[in-house]
Each structure stands twice: as structure tokens, then as C-alpha cells.
Length: 230
Image (cartoon, rainbow, N blue to C red; front, side, top):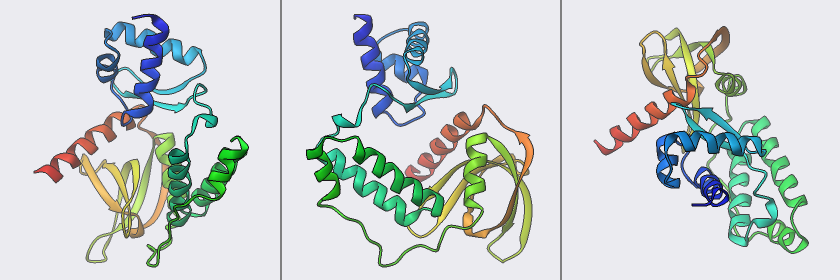
């Protein structure tokens, strides 16, 4: 396979596969060896693609200069408008504002015909019963997850008793009626799920668990899938 075709297939795999994607899966998708896959990742990065991750941790395509907004078709525009509207309803003020700005930026770069499709999308979202407002600690938890920084949290158990523990925040999950923090608990040395509304306080400890977040989150989600299928 010609190298340009191979790189195109690699970019396509990074766009459509659930992230982070392991090197082995990407090598299988592009039908190359792991050594060639690592070289192709380096080539894409040199060409401007922002690809997070490393060997053994998995890869995520976080910025793709080869995919301009003008390539969105009508259904993709509908999906973007609907999805960002849901974020505005469900997120904390910072996330809601980010969704609003993202939609404005995307719309501004579209051809006039597609702009009209975005402004007059035929699908809308609304919640008669909204989940409680996100707790104030959400912003700190989100930043700590990005920074791979350990947190000390105060947490209310089911009986209302408060405990303190150090956790490695991996991801925040937006469920139907609540927000859940997926984390590695340093006390229990195991994965745990915490209701964000039960977290009374949170502070960064100064300790880092980088670069383990991607691998830990992959293991946690694999465990959760096993619980659902068991």
C-alpha cells in the first residue's frame, strides 16, 4: 500500500474508533507492523495532527487539520447542533459556555447554505426534568483529570457519613439523573465510582499520576463492560 493511502487510513481509523485506540488495533486496521505504525503516527504529528498518547497507552486524535468543517453534511450538522445543545443543558456554566462558543465557531466557518442548516436545524433537545445543577467541584475535577493530578476529596457515603480519600480522577460521566466520577482510589487500590453531588470538597494534592490516566481509564471501562455483560 502506498504511504499516502496508509496515512489516510490511519487518520480515518483515529477519527472513527473509540478512543483511546491501542497501537495494536491501529496496526490491524491499517495492515502494518507496530514499527511502521509508530513511524506513521510520528509522520502525522509532524504534519500537524495533534495525537495524544504513546505506545502502551493508546492514541487519541484531538486536533485534525485535515478535516475542515466544510466537509460536514446535513446530518452531521444536525448531530453537532443537537449534541452541543444537550451539553448546554447538562453541563456546568463553563462547559455550557464552551458548547455555545464551539457552535458559533463551527457555524462561522461553514458555507452559507450549510450555515442555514445549522441555524434552522430540524431537531431540538429539551428537558422537562433536569438533573440537579453540577456541583462547584466539577471544574476542579475536570482540570485535575486533564492534568492527571491526584485529588483529596471529602465524600458522603450512603448513610451521610463523610470520609476523606485520595483519588486519581479519570473521567466524569453524565448519567440520566446524576454525574459520576470514575477514579482510582488510592486507599482501596482499586477503581471506584463517586457521585459528584456527594463530593463535599476537593483539593489538588500536588502528586501526579501521569502518564497513567489513559491506560487506567481503558481498564476501568473494560471492567464496567464486563459487569454489564455478566
